Image 1 (tube, one colour):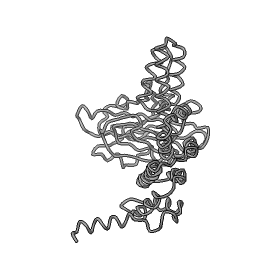
Image 2 (cartoon, helix red, strand yellow; image 1 turned 90 degrees about the vertical axis):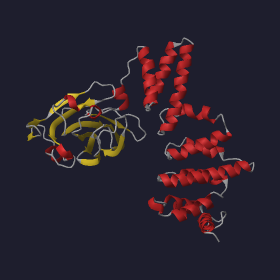
Image 3 (cartoon, rainbow, N blue to C red; image 1 turned 120 degrees about the horizontal axis):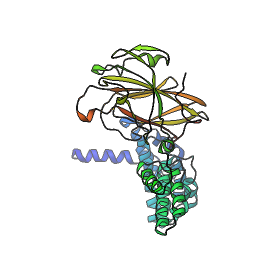
Image 4 (cartoon, rainbow, N blue to C red; image 1 turned 135 degrees about the horizontal axis):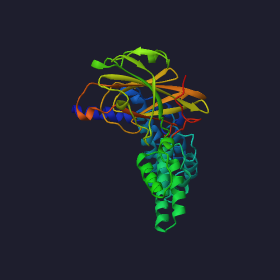
Length: 381
């Protein structure tokens, strides 16, 4: 037998379930699929589980869709394949999907957004009117995809009101849409419409940008050594302290930005700024202890600490800058939380390598901006 046929038979064997579909336990199959890891760890068992799961009745779809919770990306792909196989077989044989259960799962914001979205796709497939019932209620949903759909509908509605010469209705609709918008393209569209209608739009507050900072530096980053060097601000924040910096004594100073997207231009604070490392700090006040995301944009190397704990860092330069370029999850406590950012610039002299700046915003895990409560301050002592 040719070697290619042997390899093919081996692949087929791996895809055949070791137990019949009728005897398979959905929970155990989901567990096997979600155990799959990198470098094919658990891949054989996951393939077998997918094959068995794909033969189950449509009544198992809600359970499979709920299985997306805590599933890694590879496991999620396996689950999607099983869901689509079950749905295709069900519909091709003239049977029905469990539409009531799917609708209930879609509206359950505690479920994984990936499973909810796939349930929505299935429901829309058999009920084209479902989006008209569901999407209008998703403006503040934890799922960014559902929010985007809801915002898009409101933008169209507002534009239609403008065509009907109803400026008041258009303004109210655009303001409502902005409350749930987090995608930059939609926010820009809404801000433009509202500003043309003489309505003030505070994008700093909307996105949750941190705009008031204390800073100190520059410290030495010649030869890129500064990223890993522990300078005094990493050990202790003492705003009365003076330190030996790259070009002499350095002390803490304050800066704020009025840029609507919260961009802080570090290069304006120091000169020269090549081969430099700067520290910047501020506070974020949270009404409760919670998980959230620190979303950073910068073309420079960086590290971030929250309440003394380093969350992440990236030793990379000049790969562009965009809103939400980096997303770092962290925990904050109720009250004041200290954020420390280390920002490093290298020694490249090309025109495109001169940006020394950043923007940092605080958002919930779905991307909705969170304003500091009370308003942000730089009065740390």
